[in-house]
Structures are given as C-alpha cells and as structure tokens.
Image (cartoon, rainbow over all chains, first blue to last red):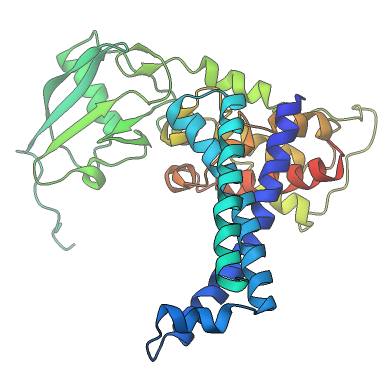
Length: 115
Length: 248
C-alpha cells in the first residue's frame, strides 16, 4: 500500500468528521441568522451584539476550522479529476486554499466578535 | 377469451441506429419490423441475420444470466436481452444502440472487457480460504450482519453495466470501478476469507474506493438491483477508521 493511499483514507476520514461538525454548525448559523434579523437589523446593531461575545467568537472560529479541513480535501479531488492535475500539485493547491480559508475566516471572526 | 388490448405492431417499422466501427466509426441506420414482446437483443439479432451479417455483437444466454449482452440503448447501459423495445421506445420509433462506454470497442457492439476484469483481480476479488476439502463446512449464520452485507452484493454477474455508467471511471480511468469494489465488499464481509487486510490495502486511495463520489448511477442502473454505492461507502468507512488508527 502506498503512502498516498493511506493519506487518501485519512483525508476521507477527516472530511467526514468535519462534515458532521459543519452539518450542526450550518443549521445553528442559519437558525441564529433568521431569528436575529426577523425584525430587521442594521450592520452596526449586529456588531454591537457580537463584538465582545466570546461564545460567538468560539463558535465561528470552530466553523472556520471545520471549513478549512473540509473544503480543500474536496477541491483537491475536483482539480485532479477535472483539471488533470497531479496529486502532489493538487495537494499543494488545496493546502494554499486551506490557508486562505483560515486567514480570511479568522479575519472575519476577529472583526465581528473581538474588535 | 377477451381480445388483446395491445395495439397491432405488425405494420410498424423501427428505425434503428447502430454503432459501426471501433473507437472511430459512425451510426448506421437499419429498418426493423416491430414485433410482439420484442427485446433489444431481438432487434440486433434481426439486423445481423437479415440485413447485415458483418455486424458484431456479443450474447450467450438470452435470459439475463450471463451478463454478456449489455450495450448502450438510447444512451443508457442495459442488458439488451431483458429490455423490451416497448420499455425504451418513444413516438419516433427510433432506437440508438451503441457499445458500452468506458471500455475499448473491439468492433461494432462488442467491447474489450479485459481492463474491467483486470480491475477485479487488482481489487483482490478472488476468495482465499484457510480450510481444505478434508475439513467440515464453515458454519455461517445467514442472518449475521456480515453475511447479510455480503449477500446484498453477491449476485453480481459482471455484466459491466455499472462500470459503463460510472462518471468517475470516465474521469479517472485507473479507478477500480463499482463492480470490482462491490466484489471486494462481499469478500470483506466473508468471514472465511483470509486476505482481508491485503484487500483493503489494495482498494484504498484515489484509484480505489475513495474516488467514488456517491453519484448512485451504478446503483440506479444495476439490472440485479445491487447497490455498489452502499458497498463502497462501507469500504470507505472501514478503511478510513483503520487508517486513522494506523491499522492499515
């Protein structure tokens, strides 16, 4: 068995675990959003409520991490199959994509819940 | 005896477009009289016997046991012997018959299934037991979870319909495909087999079960109502857990 096969099997496992996390988080996110803005809410009113809220920051921090694990694994598969790109290049691209998600996601979480 | 309510089909003529050539070629049109209880295999046989003896195709049992007559009928992989013309014909009375996709074409409707069966061997699709004829039969409870899982996929006859229907095989030619993985799943659940670990190692990874996107086309098209997708999901789960625990 090649190292690549073991890597693929582990990647599948982590994609599945992160999918379970995302399934819960996406539902919670949608419910909170719909509940919070049902009477209309401006951007500044939203920030008034979220900034300084530790729970809010932890929730969306974990959300970003789950995305950073889940999405790049799928992207690597797609670029290999549809783009004919080699597995090692696909892994490199997916790692960059993961860093991008963590970077942009962390900046958003920081801006909304801390600053 | 009540008169038949079936419309008379004696005067109808089917317009049948059949692939002629190898990987390069073209569809050629034939006109075939419509008959009662006519199958697609009857249509192809009529063309070869009455209109064009140079047409090549493959069949054996004619009753859905051997799996050798699978072809694309109006774009979908099917057993031609068990597909009545009435099931696939529309108002235009036109049929399009082509060789199975995802396999090289030898000539006309006959495909080269070598790679398809080689992948079964790569997936360690052979049973290997530990006991000989001198020992007693293994006692397997038919209602045990493992035997039930094996039974769900054991009726595969290797016709290639699932393999021809699979998008992932088209995108990634080294992918083992649904039939080989279904076979691996049945053997993984066979408690008498002795090469479980070797098999799981052989089918892990990108060319194996982890390439499956769960499109369910194999399950949708399987003439035996087997779900290779379910078996592949079982393999992914088993291999994923073992890889994380370092047991592979």
